[in-house]
Length: 230
Image (cartoon, rainbow, N blue to C red; front, side, top):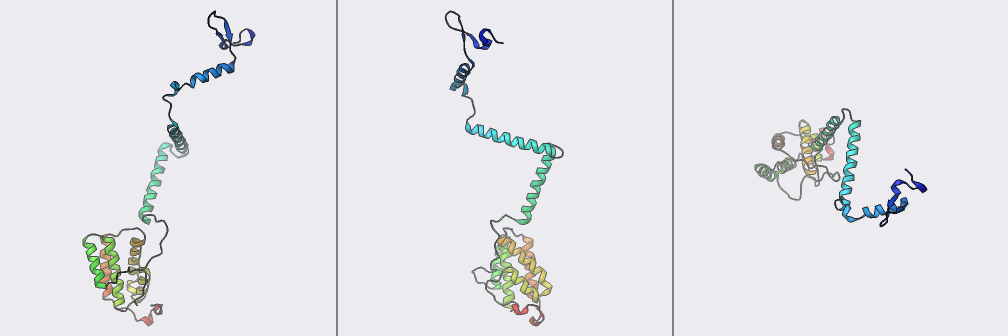
């Protein structure tokens, strides 16, 4: 409500001493109030810059969740179900594909720099198996299997041959074992280059395959397709 001279009641203040009314315009009054409120004593308990940033971040997250809950079927409960489904899907993919790698690796040679006989690889595999190091046991038993095929001249000795190449070459001459050989090579690649781990069952299966192939008679090379590639 305005008083005489166009000033409001809020702007009509009493001066000191004789009680003479003093008119104060809005701008100086506002500046005076701001000066007063800028006193540090009024801001002792204000959050610091980091706390304000964190509060704004959580406000933003809360807004996103509220929006997602409103859009999801069933509201917040539906959002929880969707989140659990996404987590379960991620876990299933991790279990199926193994530990993610920075880049896909090209399969390396089956044999490392150590030259061993088939018996030497089998002994190394057995030692790893006794210590329950199943990944190393499977690797050594696969090398033993391929080395034995080379010793029998079923396969030629080819430096740099991979497990997959050995399985394909041997499977052409031992067709009854073509599928188990490919499966064994896949397990070897998965544990050697794919970050997977082997178990006792994989090792025992490979031991059985190694023993069975040891007594199998290969087809004559002339009757196998691709025999000239060996």
